[in-house]
Image (tube, rainbow, N blue to C red; front, side, top):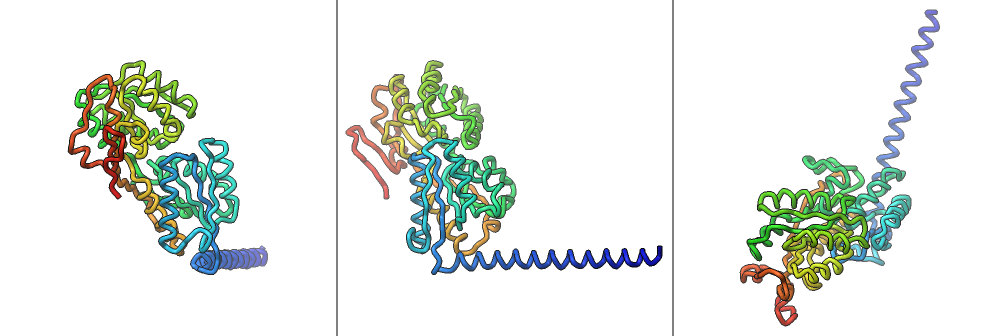
Length: 361
């Protein structure tokens, strides 16, 4: 029995040493592969593969993606030279977006760039099953903390293979501006998709702000772009003074329908998405998506230079842009006005003749 005990202890010690040595070798190999990958990313002789994922062809997404590529080019990563960019666009179809996410996370891309909240969600979900997970940089996202389960209090607490920027909509500023144009506003309509986490965040902010200002937020839901018009008509039938379009991709995809429906009801429509004043919205106050895209592109260039995404916190940035269309004042049921101070603040202003009266560079 004594001899057996000694042999057992020796065998156990040997197995422990073997396990320790194996772990050390695996760790060494992992570190070696990590360093080799970082070195390869910095090798200007190798063309790096980049996947650019867009959920739909709408202005904020297109502007953000253009900003991504412009910043990368400024940092020396021109498409067709140091990087080869493959573009993916789901055109508003979630099943297509999920298939794209599965494709890019299972392929050998050096970097995945995504624009928009639903693209972030789809790639985050697909990346959980990828071996290894693909490096992912995101932007044009209202609330990444909710969308990708990132710690709101510790912005470095996120999966080590991903990073990006959040751009929470300036909801308080939007409703304060609305009150400047018509202090008597009491009821504001909103159509939104509860399946979009970015829209949930914006709606919660709007509820709180409207409660503070004594405004009733009249809500209607639309699960897809084809149901937006019907939802807008239902909201308008409940007697609202104006319609608000939040950063909701489902609704923005059908913003022309929203604008036409509001015009028929003779109430103004305002948005948190610049680019819609030229279509007939009274004003847009929201993110400068090209600027946010450039900031996101700079993060992507840092990663391609060899910086670990794990060391980059997910911060919230919101460079604002105001666009105003004075033509939208015509034919309204109630008297609205745009103060001179607001006109001076606008980056883009359409005057009564329909010209671009003001367009800052």
